Length: 396
Ligand code: HEC
Ligand SMILES: [Cu+2]
Image (tube, rainbow, N blue to C red; front, side, top):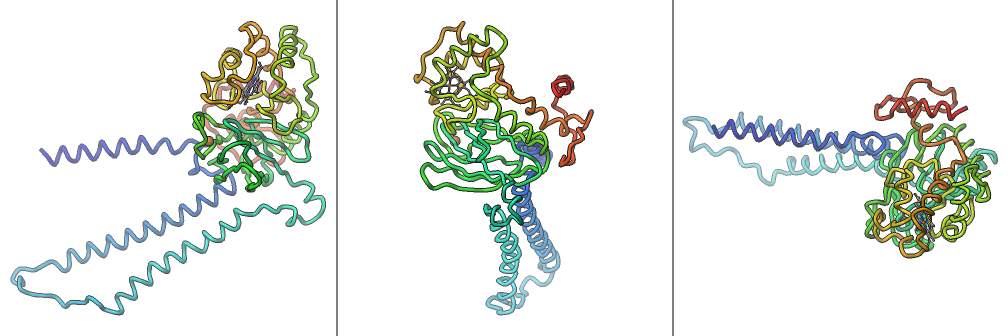
């Protein structure tokens, strides 16, 4: 009875474990499904160490079983003492040397990849001036509890959604406006701290496939640390260029056609522009740059970007992100005015390139675009076809 129960319990535990581990497989979140050079290198290292460990376990268990079976005490030999081998030089040497060899096997790729991942001098490596010119640097500033992205020399600044092209490495310079945060997009790269002051870190990221990748602050930084999310939106090179030029043309002066939204704009300019820029400057504001706010899927990186949520945010940001830097530092408008401002914010769509473009060849295979540089795709569900249809019409 006990044995049966025992087996039952093992089964239950294994089931629970399987359920738990199945959470590890979510694409766009998982370091176990790498979609970038950096993540791929980390993944390879994991596989190498795993292989070595499995090999050691197999050999040790095999020797253990053989010894158990072959050298059991036999009937009639109860008094027999086998030959004692402690202090045997040959054996001692063998089992000291084997782990050293295994560690060396592990050390070679680890050191190699460590140097490869530290590559942040693209200009020095460029073959000609044109290639050096083509290098894309993005200055990332982490703030409690949001992310600012400034595209160097391109006069484009945005927040929360980081657009990158899929055809090359993108170099990020990481700094912080307040405390230490950490930049982490598990599917495409390792993580790196963003420090306040002059101690700036640099690394490259790249996405081999188009897609929307989940990023998160990976260093505890305050009450809303767990809500400090961002997205990396990897689009084809053509779409990226289009997005950059659309963003460059956006300006705070553009007046929306809709009258309610236009009223909202006036209100916004009165009481919100001190912290929120629309258009490129200043490079880093007190609050997130809202140039392309209307194309975002998320509000403040975490909530669905709907009018209802935006109004709620404007009236009480604290209810979304405790301890954020907006709460208490602005004049709270009436609910009606907040509605008008929300209307205005949703019109901020300088570009038709959006998260759906990053997904279209990833999630829906209906009509793959004829663009150069598209990575190969695996179809994943999760995207409603409705959205894709909508997106197709937006394209025109
Ligand atoms: C004192 C500066 C300040 C003022 C003034 C201010 N905000 Fe903010 N706002 C912030 C900060 C800081 C954040 C980022 C909060 C976070 O995510 O931690 C923010 C976030 C937001 C967001 C979410 C942005 C995103 O990236 O999704 C919206 C929308 C917003 N503010 C609207 C407004 C509106 C509308 C007004 C005017 C009524 C306003 N803000 C006034 C500082 C300010
Ligand atoms: Cu954090």
